[in-house]
Amino acid sequence: MKIYYYYYYEIDQYGILHFTTRKVDQRPSPARGNTMVTSPSLITIHYTADDNPQSTINTFTHSSAKISAHFLVDRAGNITQFVEPNTIAWHAGVSEWKSKCAANNWAIGIEITNTGWLPTSTERLKNTPHPYAPEFQDFEKYTFSQLESLKELIEVLKVKFPSIIETVGHEDIAIYSGRKQDPGPAFPWHQGNFSPRPPLRSKPEKGELCVVASSDAELFRSRSTHTTEKLVNVPQSSKIEIVTCSTTDSDTCSDPNPIWWKVLYVDNAGKIWEGWMRRNNIAWNIFN
Ligand SMILES: [Zn+2]
Image (cartoon, rainbow, N blue to C red; front, top):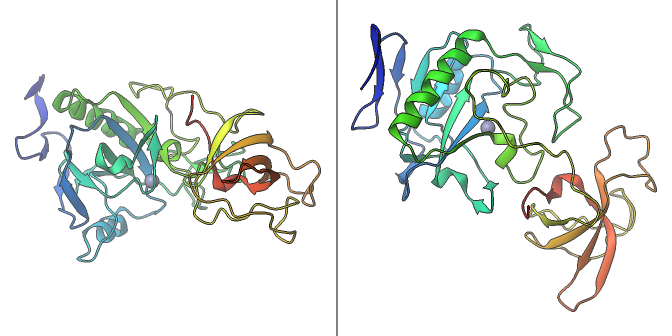
């Protein structure tokens, strides 16, 4: 138990969160796995992409739910708990962080009620391109109350699980890069006690080794557009080398956010192919 003047908060022996000064609802989700094999070492921040916290709660607690998170923090700072923090919840999807895959097995997921780039009447951060998906650049701001609540929640989780060493965004661990945009550029990593996030890279370097991160990655084309010849089938998890991250010699130069990158691929017979792949099929930040 942590004494804070006149209030306390803790996670009890059953994994249940208690706050004396915040509203915490317990709404167990059926979307859950086993107890984590190792204690959680990562906290992953999400936004709900939904205006209404109740619809998130309904989704996570539906009898046939296939997605969940451990906690939800609404705009007023109220918290709903769905899964005990050392039990696997289903929030991260296909994911990777520092060469470890399947983050659901070792990461706590916290959802924040926020619509992201979906248009709403709430206050917005405008003209700020998402680092991994620059086509999105207008994001809902987070409220003071929910950020304060989130800080306290992270603090109590770190007290309970000293194994937690980092807090990152879903956008940072989702494969492929750019597939997820939460919590997005409106999330104030630089404020308060949030762990500093590692530096973001919006694209890999020329010559960098990357990985094909999508099962629809057969789009290895002679030019940077769907309509050109498909050169070779490139399976998921194949290594590729970046030639260029721009579409300067492409058919889609008018695209302000180039999505085709030129890469090298070596097939099983040792033949080197040079062609174009969609950015969304490529994962970087993996080998360094
Ligand atoms: Zn997410």
